[in-house]
Image (cartoon, rainbow, N blue to C red; front, side):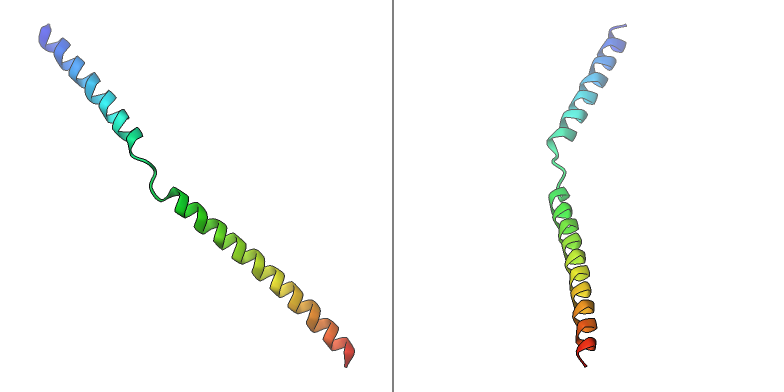
Length: 65
């Protein structure tokens, strides 16, 4: 009976230690990935704005001729 109690106790300690170790490991790269996604979104928005302005200027220039 003592062996069973010791085994269960050690199993519980191992489970707790595993959970604590998981909390100690920060999610590396998550901030970098977020920054890359924001940069890609910003580049896409700027690209859309440039295409819209270029289209407007081209259509207005065609009216001048």
